[in-house]
Length: 278
Image 1 (cartoon, one colour):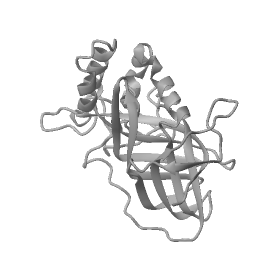
Image 2 (cartoon, one colour):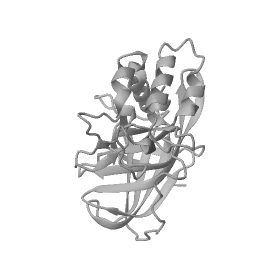
Image 3 (cartoon, one colour):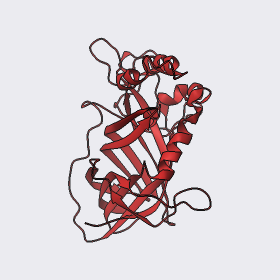
């Protein structure tokens, strides 16, 4: 079930990647590592996230498999985060442990979600920066508050392909990258998996104190999760989760009108970090 958090996968017809126009200034590099990752919630139809399919759907819309889109806190329509609709059901059952298990994986260093901003002349407003997303490697140190300490140095996990998007703008401390790809190693129950994120969208906001916050949105390939859950009588919520996945899938309908993917948003808090240079 941790796959519900991290398997953000979108097909080729999803949001296009930002054109690669490399920034080549000799400037600062900003690196952050996620201290927490949680499900993106909604309240009254309002959620952070992205319009992944470039379409505003409602309950009568076949293109969205009859799942209504949400609205961002800034009033932008078409926000795709269908997973948040049945999140309360999941958290009221065996799935209540999901975020705790993910936090344990972060604290132990099994999941070190890192973002690097390159060629940063100004950490507030910069017309051209490059963004890399990758999995870190190492054993993190925790503070007295139980979260990752700032200023730690990690390796880049060589077994996981990083993602890079070039030629982006940093506006009021925030950068948005489309076409993000990432593979995260995870342990789901007794199964070791590499969970792929392709053509997802990332928003990251830097703070003056070196911390950052952000969110990433994409579509879960529901059949991938169903294959894991099907026939697992030892998982009490397996059948419930399968039903919910099929009911709320809302992205990229196929020729039969069935949506194979479920939109979701992950929110994270991050702190400054460094990366070992080769």
